[in-house]
Length: 192
Image (tube, rainbow, N blue to C red; front, side):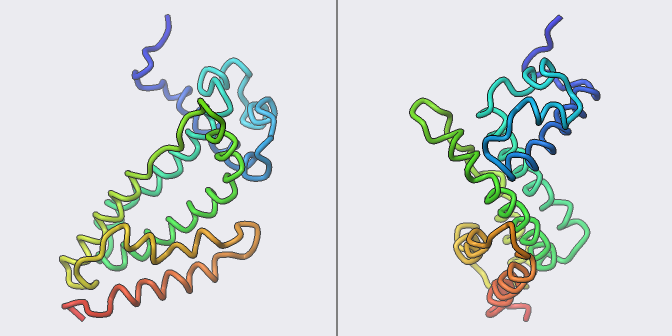
């Protein structure tokens, strides 16, 4: 009996899927041409299981991108529940930087998956934009950042993280850049 496409995955199928994504992120970051058979083997799944989850290289690459982006987006609300809004925003920016470095490593694979005519488009970044807006509005309402900053403004301000080389010790530079941006967001905040 075939599972419906929109039906939730069984727990073992979900673990297999997560493991494939984890291994594929590592391998495709190293080489956009990493053989899918090697990814399946390192993930500890058979070819049939692998291709049931990801029938094409493009499907795998785009799902890694979507999955990583969604994981970053999903951290916004829990951060707001456990931290002051400006601290939640700053910590979330660190998570976004880690996503940017993973995405930079995957750039060749994403380009290959989406560049040819008839290939699927790169997934939109709406989940990350919505998460940024949630954090910005909470910090604005708390009076800890200047009013009127949009997600688009934030992404332009932190755009430098996308130029860092993920194969270097990028974390200290990203931290300095993001601290600088956070300091700028606080200037003119009514609660400061």
